[in-house]
Image (cartoon, rainbow, N blue to C red):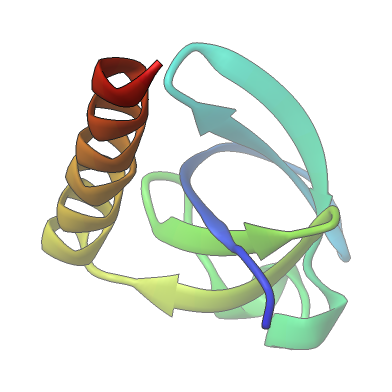
Length: 80
């Protein structure tokens, strides 16, 4: 099982790299698994696992995933 984090492409850096915004934290992400920069656009949402974009997702899917993570963290805080 892997955990992929949703982010939004903020800048295309090179043919196989983009800068991705994870809620204000920006990281360089490899696009090779998606076919490179020609397959994505600035503003697209992607799932990222260990520095690689593994899937393009909708804004709604990104929002729902982030909300799910927040609910898990909130539940964990309540049990501590």
